[in-house]
Length: 305
Ligand code: MN
Ligand code: MN
Image 1 (cartoon, rainbow, N blue to C red):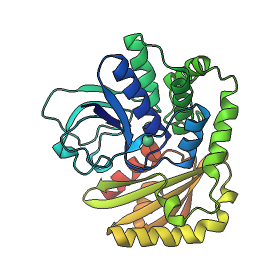
Image 2: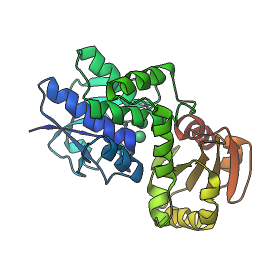
Image 3: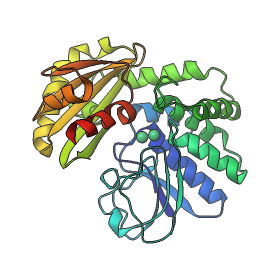
Image 4: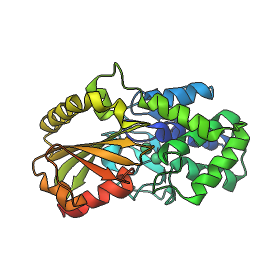
């Protein structure tokens, strides 16, 4: 039976492309592996897959009894609900170590870089295996996406070097142009249900016993989202009530202005003040804040502690 390779819930481009790339590498190393995903691909990922002639992984939400490699996450909350009945044989990630545990030794590739695909570039190099052109192009896009075209504080020199090397393999000369094109696709919100926008890149966290949801929408210009702000706020309030969360926050990130408006639905809005030194009933502007992982989650974790 093939080892299943998959990323987190609400898959983003890194999660999708990492699963495809790790499955490719494993197959070339003689381990039968299959890329799957916990949901349909988002518009940005669809654009990237189409651009490089790749197909979206099959959607799989139950993994009981299977061998699994986790990419782009190591949190139980981000994994399939029955992961406990599966065997995790590998983790490839760039987040803080999560709460996944194993009963057997496993392979772990976890680096403090801006994107899982940067780690995977290192894995291909380690084994001396050539990256197929299409996969290289998609990995390059995943890194540009996760690092917001190198602007995110999570971006490292390794990410930049990986993009340069992958662009060569993919034969892409205008990487930043392609990145911008990708972010324009990502910015398109017209006709999309508010719920889909809230969940496009959404994660729940356990913060000192409080369930806190944080979503993020990245756009090339916040003006695109201005007409939808009231509806988005109403939607995160509804999501908070349905999930029984303490809070649901939605970051509206302007990648050109390099900052985020954060919409707030919370039982106790003072956590925002504690986390960022700024107060607002329904929203605050967080200048320079673009990374949920490095600039938002740690602040809230301290505020909730
Ligand atoms: Mn991800
Ligand atoms: Mn990632």
